[in-house]
Amino acid sequence: GVRGDGGTGTDIIIFGAAQPSAHTPEPVAIPNEHVGGAVTQAVTLTNTAPADGAYENLDAGIGSPTAGITASGSFTGLAPQATDTTDLLVGLDTTAPGAKSGTSTIGLFSDGTGLDGNGQTALPSQTVNVSGTVYAYAAPSPSATVLNFGATRVGGAALTQSLAIANGTTATPFQEALVYGFGTLPAGFGVGSSGSGTVAAGGTVDATVSLVTGTAGRFANETVALGLTSTGVGTSGL
Image (spheres, helix red, strand yellow):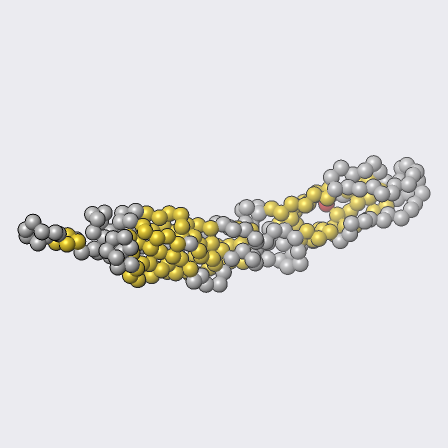
């Protein structure tokens, strides 16, 4: 505040400390993310001190994240009644899938730099609680890339080969499902009812490819595309 001397002399300004608000949101819920992603969310802080020229600015920095989360960023010189909505960031450690939760700490300082010459004065810190879930993409693993049907006579039973299509090796709720489908097959070849579908994490489907025997010929070096897509339907929603 300002103290007058009761006369015509110089008034003395006694500066008050910055007054940080409670951060928002609290807790912080990070949207679902893929392994390797980098989604972050900003934490908002306001210097609630009166804007009357007699209060210091606010400095803040976020860090010390516990396992499973990330935290970074800082700001300086936040004036009274001003709000920062962009600089203090929290997120998830996306190096591995799973449910993540933890805390980080906001360090707070009242800063008189350029005002009363007192520099930084530590204020009580704030703890930020963070949670979210990281999902792995589907992990397709066809059992073969070459199918050899052998030989037969015209009019014989159709030749068949089975192709196992796996989605990883472990049934886990933190891995997306696999959508697969054969493209247009070359003339003479066909695929059964398992030619397209969805495989859950840790699951396997056997697709049967056949070669009809109605026409003589050498059916060699033929190719077909196997479409493979990770889907978050029923898991991550991504």
